[in-house]
Image (tube, rainbow, N blue to C red; front, side, top):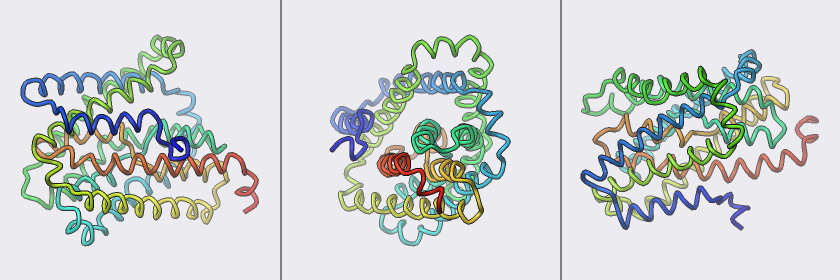
Length: 326
């Protein structure tokens, strides 16, 4: 049953972190120290991502600009448009903070590891998926703060400077990533010997951020403000959004004449949102805001997309001839 629902160890640990933060939240000076440690872990994580990413795969995949343009359109245009269109319905139902989190999720870049993994399982264009997902994350470090500035804080009374956030994100995420690329000849052989290091560090860092974020939210009264009905509405909203995007990502590449391998890469890269980059960005962009409520939508969307993409990738891997005949 766990396999069917894609409830892997990481998902279970995410739920455990939320429960732990609800029971034993970190606060005060301990929370400040924990935040410093978490920030350092995020920087190391993106250094490892930079060292792991193959330059050859990037060069091979970057030539397919039509595919990357379409994925970029899904990630930073269609998602935000749908999120903004949902405002009249979701804002009264979810409240301002949860709707901000839903909209912030729509502004995030695509995932890297899971997009590539699902594309590989489904026999898609892995090289282009590597390049497209990686480019999405790098571009998102600059595009996401601007979208937040225009459509979230731009419509509120908060004094928000996107330039400052872009600089902080660049220093925390992009600089370590570039440093990892530069030091790749020396670091990558070490990563080959310990292939689970990046994955373990990736998941561990997210768990730390989630625990810290929900601790602060619980101290501020998160569960007094978010009811079971609200969680259900948020889950339905995430499911509807994913369904619409996946249908568009399934049929638009076909209409545009992309090959089956490219259609698969577009589908998985264009329909997903990153939790790994999203939570660290939220820490920087929403200082002083209820961070637990901001990251709750992406946590729910993240699990739903893993479940659905896992089933679809497995189905396509067993029936590759169906898509090629259509």
